[in-house]
Image 1 (cartoon, rainbow, N blue to C red):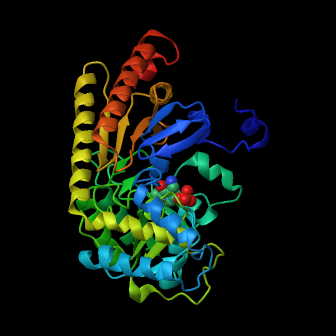
Image 2: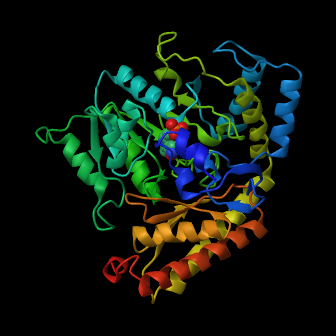
Image 3: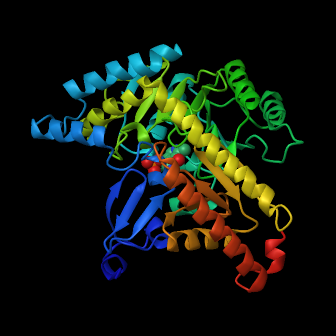
Amino acid sequence: MFETFENLESCVRTYCRDFPAVFKRAKGALLWDERGRKYIDFFAGAGALNYGHNNDALKEGLLKYIHEDGIAHGLDLHTEAKQQFIEEFNSIILIPRKLKFRLMFTGPTGSNVVEAALKLARKVTGRTNVAAFTNGYHGMSLGALAATGANSKRRGAGIPLSNIDRYPFDNYFGPDTDTLSYIERLITDASSGFDAPAAFIVETVQGEGGINVASREWLQRLARLARKLGSLLIVDDIQAGCGRTGRFFSFEDAGIQPDLVCLSKSLSGFGLPMSMLLIRPELDIWEPGEHNGTFRGNNLAFVTARLALDYWKAPSFLQNLKQTSDRLNADLQDAVEHYRDIVPIKTRGRGLLHGLVMPSTAVASRVSTLAFSKGVILETCGPTGEVLKLMPPLTISSDHLNEALEVIRESIDRALYDAANSDFVSNSDLNQ
Ligand code: PMP
C-alpha cells in the first residue's frame, strides 16, 4: 500500500511513519484517506492550519484570484495582493495592538525567517553569538539548527553548529530554580566566559520541545534583561503565533514588545508557504537584496493571508477560541485528576496548544498509535517524544473536539493498561 513512498521517497520522511495512510481530502478539522476513512486532525499541519483545512472563505477568494489570472509569482515585485495584505495586517493586527513593525517577506519556510532574524540581529549589534534556550526549536537550516536544542536534529548538520549560547528556559530545572537570575549572573559577570549576545531567541511556548510555557514574569524579565544588555529580543512565533495561544501573538499576554518577530505556519491561513519577519523600524538596516530569495512573497498566500485576517475583526472568533481552549484545558485537567492514583500525568499549555506529559516515551507513542487507529491524528513532542501534543484547528467544532478527546482518553486508558500488563514498556519505565 505504501510501496511508492517506501521505494522512491527518501528515508528522511517522518510524520507519515506515525500516521500510515494515504490522505486524499480534508475539510475543517477532518481528513479522509483514500479508502474513505475519516480522521479528526489534532495536529493541524504542525500549526499551519489554524483556520482548518480548505477553509471556505479563503478557498473561494483564492479560486477567484486564480480565475482572474492574478499574479502567482512575482519575486518581491510590488503586487496588488501584497499591498492589500500589508495594509490590512497593519490596520487589523498591528495598529490595534499599538505595535510598529516593518514587514519583511523572507523565503517561505519558518527556518528561513529565523535565518533572517539571526542575520539581522548580528548585523544590528555587531555581535556574533545569539542566546537560545534549552528545548528550543527554530528550524533545520544551519543557522536555525544551531539555535535548536534537539540533538537528534543537530546531528544532521555534519559540521559544528556555532555561535549560539545555550541557556536554560523557564522552569528547566523545576520550579525552585530561577533560570533568569542564573542567566543574568552569567552574562553580567565579567569573568563567567559569557558575553552579551546579539539577541535572545525564544518561543513563549515551546512547541516541538514539549509544550513548555514561559511565565509572563519570566518573559518580562527576559525583555528587560535584553534591553539592559543591548541585545535584541526575537520571539519565534512560528508555531505559537497566529492565534494558537489565544491571541494573535503569543507574547501579548506578557505585555512585551519584541524587536523582531518570526511568523510563518498559519500566516497564510490555508497551509500555503509564507513567512514574515516583523522588524522594529529603527532596526531595518538591511541593504537591498541582503537576504534575497526567489520565493519571497507567495502571492497566492498573500490572498489567503489577507482573508484570514477577517477572523481577527470578528469578536465572535476570539470568544469561540476562548471557549474551545477552556474546554480543552478543563478536559485535560480532568484527565490528570482521573489518572492521579494510577500514574502521574501532567498537562501544560496555553490556548489551543496543550501537552499531556505521559509517564514514558513508549506510552506516549502507544497513545498516538492507538488514537490514530481510532481516527484521531495526535502528534508527540518533547525531548524524547514523551508529550502528547494537542493542537486542533482553532475553528474545530465542539462535537469534533469532544469526539477526539474521548478517543484520546480511551487510548490513554488502553496504553496504560497495556503498559501495566505487557512488556512493551517495563513497569520501571512507567514509574519514572
Ligand atoms: N520555529 C518554530 C517555533 C517551529 O515550530 C518551526 C517548525 N516546527 C520552525 C521554526 C521551522 O519552520 P519550518 O519547518 O517551516 O522551517
